[in-house]
View 1 (cartoon, rainbow, N blue to C red):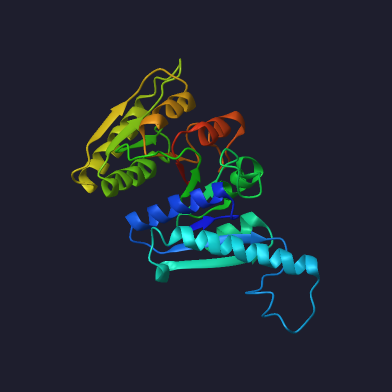
View 2 (view 1 turned 45 degrees about the horizontal axis):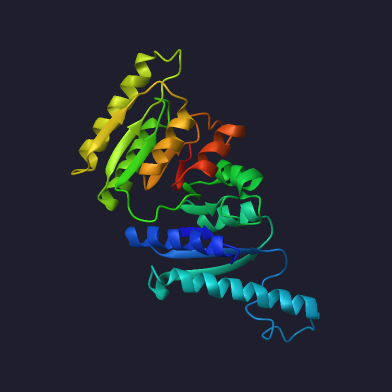
Length: 270
């Protein structure tokens, strides 16, 4: 099950479309979650047990329109019987994480202008920090397949999981896997090189047919990945690598990567 947060805006519908295409690639079902600030009803007309104000009636109608628009976009990628729409209330982060459980969760960024207008800030950081599964942060959307998936690693504890996930994404997309490790001025840790080499060999064995290449230029890690995003369908990183520490997109590092990336970024939890 792939879960996506949507608010019915044009940018939000673009995120639903990406999530729908992702679900299609993996032959998975799609759950669209719209978070409201008030109680959830199927229809204001159905709620005959009490009278509601004109303002509440209009608010419910707008919510229904958002859900219908997202559903219409999703069925362009996934059969309607595999699309589940939910309207939930409460804290958006808790609602999205709970709805996704341990499956992939798709959210947007301020660059796309959706999901409460704050997804590039505290909401995205909290989602990534609390999610139990991969989180795809959608910013740039390639107009056509680029046939490349990029794994950003530093040889830390998330390296194997990041490379393995990226290799599977490359396999299902019939794409090349590029493993990037940016070297800072003082980078000379042989153990990190060994960890990356082992992860690459594991990926080659498990994802047969995937072409795997690697690079280790002396560049700023995030700057390197932002540059590579122009040539990629997807970038995969871990929460404990490349400055994404303790499950949080920290300061300018996370903002630069998720907001400036020209393709979606998937963050793998530690």
